[in-house]
Length: 265
Image (cartoon, rainbow, N blue to C red):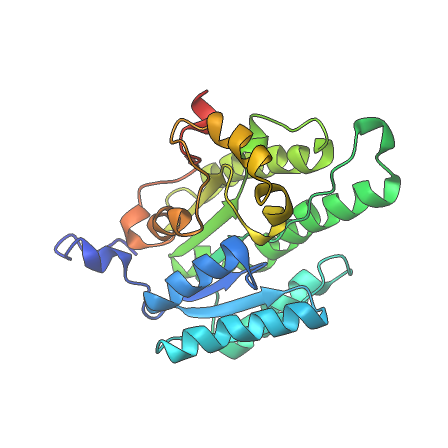
């Protein structure tokens, strides 16, 4: 379904009536995207990895959305366990309706030199960062195509182009994810579905708080960024909303860096 050409520019960002599943939404980038999409009218599925801390964090996200007048439900699924992505897709569809927007944000990174990577660490990163997203795509993308509207947004990383020496596996999975985006964008073109990648740079999140809280480390990182500062979670919201709304209906197969210019250095 094409966007209404007479609609106001602001209306193109309206997500009322849409259901959005955001993986890894209990904190950080996922939480920021979940609350922003709910504010634009989407019914939001807040996915988390089914630990006590994640249950608590996800509940706070859903509570915040509800207090602001939005709709959100929490869904637990440990992507390291076989079959959980397909089960999650079914649960969200039953509870909130067919999924129109899939944001693949959940991932893990294990820092270690290449010659110390264990089979267990390799398998865990590949399973969560690649196998689980594939199974969600297999479960949800056909329905989007059949309904004539859908948005898939993968959350990438500057590691795609500038891999950290101790993130060999993580950076590799992000590069593979981008390859999938470009392939799927061609396959769904013309169906009303778009598939894009949003690549954050050095964003200060809970995941890297220990490193970024060190003033010396932060200063070194900021000196490499043309914008002169670390990214904030709110810096990603506008790009995510663009790529997941009618405003982005003609953007397909894109790799959008939100990194203060780091990728250009």
